[in-house]
Amino acid sequence: MPPRANHPDVNLNLRVRGLSQSATLSINERSKLLESEGQTIYKLGLGQSPFPVPEPVVKALQASAHEKAYLPVKGLYELREAVAKYHCGRESLDCSASGVLIGPGSKELMFIVQLVYYGELIIPTPSWVSYAPQAAIIGRNIRWVPTCARDQWRLTPAGLDAVCREDPDRPRLLILNYPNNPGGTTYDVEELQAIATVARKYKVVLLSDEIYGELNHAGEHVSVARFYPEGTIISSGLSKWCGAGGWRLGTFTFPKSMFWLLEAMAVVASETFTATSTPIQYAAIRAFQGGPEIGEYLVGSRRVLRLIGQGMAQRLQETGIHMPTPKGAFYLLPDFSAFSKRLHKRGIDTSAQLCERLLQDTGVATLAGTNFGFSPEFLGARLSYVDFDGRQALEAIANTPPTGEDERKFVENIGKALLTAVDLICKWLQKAD
Ligand SMILES: Cc1ncc(COP(=O)(O)O)c(C=O)c1O
Image 1 (cartoon, protein in one colour):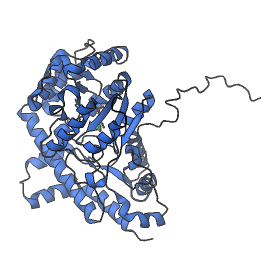
Image 2 (cartoon, protein in one colour):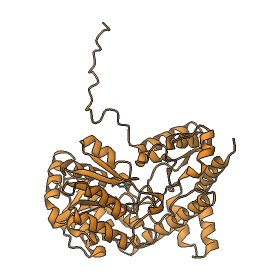
Image 3 (spheres, rainbow, N blue to C red):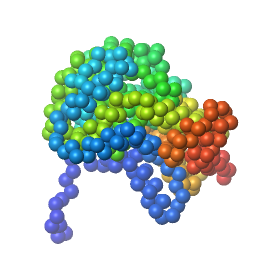
Image 4 (cartoon, rainbow, N blue to C red):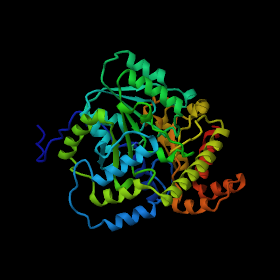
């Protein structure tokens, strides 16, 4: 018999055993490691806002650094009021401070809602990397709704209906995310209305993940809550439009008809994270209040993202790579299937192999389609376009006239590393063996 080790045995919760660290965080760490070894890495893997936190919000945080008391579990009342006002104002919804829950990032709130709501999770393929692992940790059934390239990988009302029709009374939580990670797409008003109609028909709880709402490139984001107010929770936060991912502040806004879910989440919050960081909550009031300076920051952010995203997409599309043209957020979802024969000859048959070889051969870090729910053989990958100096970009865009030539120069200058990465991808794909 081998001697018994004198440290605790490995006994892991079966739901956690075998899970790996979140894919986005892993690719970031891997990129940093390769960089520290002296390699040039193009970081198209992690989706972090490139822009600085707006100055008035930074000042508000500085002014609240002395705030040290625990706040109420649901959040600071003035912040809840500011969030309710923010959503009411733009969506003409009947939301109030008492319907807002503040958490340490919307990701944590998503985990808690999945924990307390007893029902199946419905998500389209593709979806953001963390929804499904959260459901798996909790032990919820996950139902992936297939989508197709023709629909730009977006949920259709018919796809949702087909899943719900199988068992109309089953309790379900649908997460709809737009502008979308990983697709860079969004929905127009008619499409949202049609999805809302199906959600209402089956009394689905609709979690509308609008964390990129302010980064709709045309500034025309509309919440699906307008069309299904009684069943929609709006998820938002500071991470993307306010450049403050590391501050960790997320918000859920509930209609009165779903306060029971908010209350249950607050119970779990009170036994886990207690309350979100106090100074950050004070600063967030300023962010949600908006105003001209923040408005200008957002107009600049959207323009920068639109120009860089479209510039990259155009080059990829010209090489024969199919992908939706970006409409929001900072992601592209190229489909490399047109090159499958060539890739096969090089021993590449899955998106994981594709991204690994691309990283090794060119230094371009991306995230494989499998991380978003695609089958391993689908040769798609997510590229994020945030590897540029956001502060410099905002300054430059303010001085860029809206002419094709000036905007092209802007992209070539600010998005230089990203365009180089795109060229490397295109050449790598076209390489004959
Ligand atoms: C689609 C989507 N939802 C939610 C989140 C989580 O945001 P946070 O927890 O920072 O609020 C992210 C972050 O990458 C995301 O891309």
